[in-house]
Length: 434
Image (tube, rainbow, N blue to C red; front, side, top):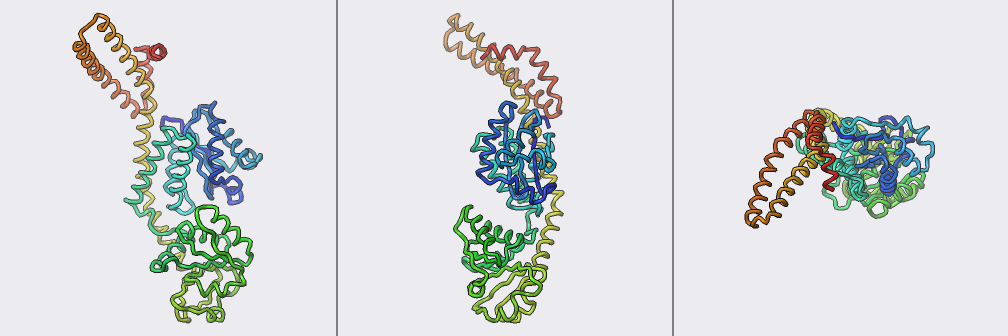
């Protein structure tokens, strides 16, 4: 690939959660960093800036001839108030300085190939959001616009032509998928989530992202539930209900679905506890805990149905196998999309030379027209001369332009550009034409 596209990336591939969370950026942080980089990197001629930050990655993409990893990390360090980022955290960052590698990496990220959960549905939306922030900050140039639209079109093909997005391939997503199936006929289902460890909190976030709003959270340490509810309230919806752990019994009576990830040696939801819960219609328990937190005999109580972690993981495993089987198809789509983008990007590199060539010939044409105009040529004849010379110019231009674009696709346009510039003295003509 002929253009100078690069990336600086930190992700779950190399960095543990404790490191990722230190450099993660919210929307305001991404927007600020874009504007900072726009100013800081201007002297290096950097363009097409994009900042992507999720729970699994923090990445900066840019177009420039030089490796700008150092100033990018310095700007990120200032944004996060982490002066050690360039030293202690530097080993966790990768610099992708080859344009092919950087562009392909962005494809892999946006389409979910590089996600912790292969085929992650959320990441495409997160990249689209990052692209919107770049457009708002005026850091997205022609290169980034074309690349992102190529990626989004490839993503559409992946959805339509492959099974790569079928099913939920993680325990958390599979849990949400099951809740959606169980409550399909229930308007505004009431979901109670008991236990907010890493898995429980992840399930809540994904339920919220899927549109569930009638959620009640409880945890043995209430502060954790309050913090999660506050986190989600800052996004785009109403506050979630939080109850003390001691208020669990009445909440059980109201819930349509109970999701438990309580880590205890014996089932918390014993038969004695469950028999005290009135069951008017079906009540679904989804037990994500190991050891189980819902008594194995719970389904002997009329109206109670239990789904344990094995059921959820079987669904996730089947979905993951389906997605992995589709990876070669996804790679083929990416290869095809990248090939088209590469051709376009190479043509973009010669467009200034083509434009100079057109301008030089047009200047000669205008000089001749002016000469005939000074001879007081009749207007109708001058008009016919203008039309004839314009048509002739287009025919003269056609073959050199076709040859230049073909040379671009072969990767050897530089020789033709140099020859064209020397033959027609395009640099001098461009200066004089200004």
